[in-house]
Image (cartoon, rainbow, N blue to C red; front, side):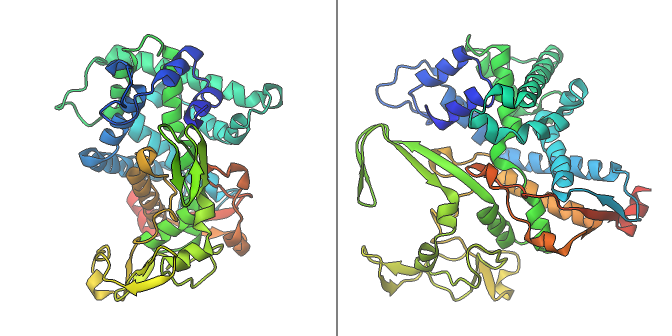
Length: 430
């Protein structure tokens, strides 16, 4: 059973009849069906999902998403009952998780969801803590709270679907419709409703399970906490390093068509290939082969890990892996005023070593929005508030490896902190 279908069944409780639609869809994710497929166009779920995610989470729609997210985030930060005197909180991760989760879901799904289901954030955070247990199929009697929480989430999302559908024309997404509106949020949500309603097996329960998966996004638990702990500057290199260290994704692929060779190994047709993102992220030899000087060991945080000198050239290798020559590489990515800097952010040569969002056809379609969420959340919080950790050693908080292979790794322990609103910001919100 493919990993995606496993998650749909055991994490999201997708009804069996809807699951069978996925299992029968052998048409692939591209616009042109795979050769030999006879799946009807309206039942090509894998393509329809991928196409709409890629369309509405990038391109021209990304600007609206970013603007809406930042506006909602700042509004929520301004409403927090925090003044210019210090207040103690038990856990920085939970604080940031709740704030970013709320703004993100409002951006994707609109405001009406919160009116129909006021407790959705608390239930999502609780349910997310059970993701590994659910996917490892821990017996229901050991985690009854997880199943009760999932039932509430599915019921709340279904009520939202029903209410929003009564208030809006659910049968079309017109080009001149607003890119965001309170009932459904982005056009993505309504587009998903339109194609799902054309499939008889995609019942209201199935559509609720699908959207729970969309807003839960277990692979994208915000790593903003680590970002904030380790740096006061918003740097692209810091962002890349945080994801390298604190995302642990299991990537599964199936050899569908013919036997294939990978690095000299013969992989038979219908075999599974499993990759672990941290294996490549911590591969010392591979990083050296890519020409990167390791200022710090790969198991340590290095804010300059992805920066190279402006004169740096990528080493080229022959088939045996030994360095053959130095050739002129592609021009490094330009950054603001990079011509005045001695270093630049450069990802050249790191293909396969930095894969927090996966790769290929299954690369995370929301990766651009996720990046902007992290950077904007970090910038907005630190522009509004002063934050001090209760224990300086919290900077070395270890990741919770219980979540390994499921995406971003939260801290293994609480990070107590205190917070106050910056005085200029406090005057502005008074």
